[in-house]
Amino acid sequence: MKLIVGFAFASTLAVVAGLCIGANATSITLSQLNQAVPVRASDSSCASVSTPDECAPNSRAVAAINSAIAKYGVTQRGEIVAVISLMAYESASWQYNINHFPGRPGQGTRAMLMSNFVEQYAQALYPAQAAQALGGGAATDAVLNNVRALVLNDNDSFGSGFWYLVNHAAAYHNAADKLRSGNADDFKDYVVNGVGAGWDDGRQTLWETVNGALQI
Ligand SMILES: *[C@@H]1O[C@H](CO)[C@@H](O)[C@H](O)[C@H]1NC(C)=O
Ligand SMILES: *[C@@H]1O[C@H](CO)[C@@H](O)[C@H](O)[C@H]1NC(C)=O
Picture (cartoon, rainbow, N blue to C red):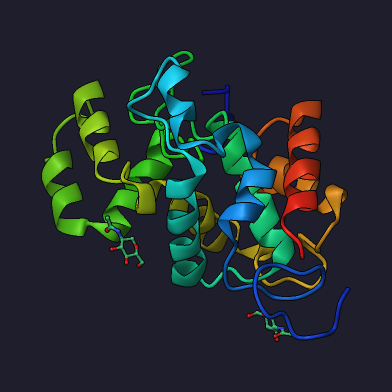
């Protein structure tokens, strides 16, 4: 829903469950996500927003996020915190699934990918359906929106930030000096240089909340 430019997202002991500083993770828990994105802890929280049809509570988000973590092999804690922070910011805590301000055709998913990335994402996941939707003609607003519709389901929409990291910002994925666990400067570097989005205090505040929540 925000104006997005370019996106267009210490322990050495084994971790039993959930995330731990400095360690790899394979999933997050609903309890952690509720602390990270408290406004969406309640299943009924979506009833009172202006876009209830687009809104998803954490109980839906957590399954889709864990599916994406496994699908894209994003297991570094710093990467998971970054992607969740980015998507929560872009979607106003899972309220929006498509761009509303100003309402760019084809822009959407929880990472609020720009339409060119949405198109690539849809083509990667559903090549036949994407080709059919694109049709080889002019990319009208309706065409862009039809392509976007292919990836607005929970798994794909909440997976978009992970897909982007792995496929379009690969230098930030599994890198020793990028998106280090608990490192706010690394997150800012990712937002500005990996995603090409603007930085503001709201992103920092949200990252701090998510970073504090996603650990055991
Ligand atoms: C964490 O994941 C990375 C990337 O998959 C891997 O290189 C590293 O060995 C893992 N670390 C641990 C402690 O499992
Ligand atoms: C979402 O992904 C999970 C894990 O891959 C899968 O079990 C589930 O069926 C998917 N949901 C939908 C609606 O496709």
